[in-house]
Length: 168
Image (tube, rainbow, N blue to C red; front, side):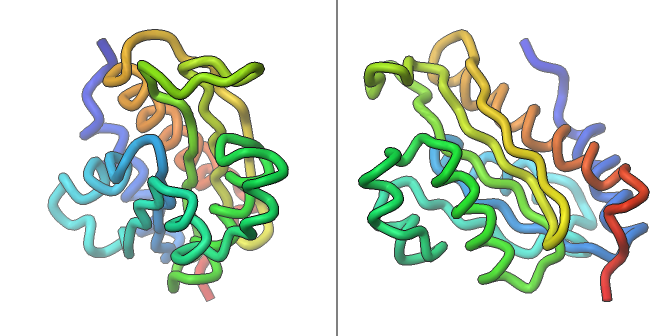
């Protein structure tokens, strides 16, 4: 079982406040759980701007501007698409940083080379970023829960970097 999210979210919120940043999430497999975790704490309106729940490919295209050809070429669960989701969130929300996730939470949906538990994560600012492929174990709920924890920790690590800057 994963540790409680509240301490992590509170620490992330403090880092964002200290920098004068606000954030957005662009979520597929987590269906808004990152946004829900962030907004579950009092005072999050100081630093959480919005969440894009882009569960379908059409939503990724319409809400985040992901190129349909990119999805067709690489699949929705890919490094290229998660990078485009992050870029779309940063471009379409008045924020300085964002987290994006796309994956196969299961129990179905696996394809060759992308088993259940495959998740692509991207966090970033206009100038910094971290993109990684995760291979998570467990059932659907466990994959989604782990994804939220890892995404929030990755964004916190990015915000703790001295070169993450400050809002302008």
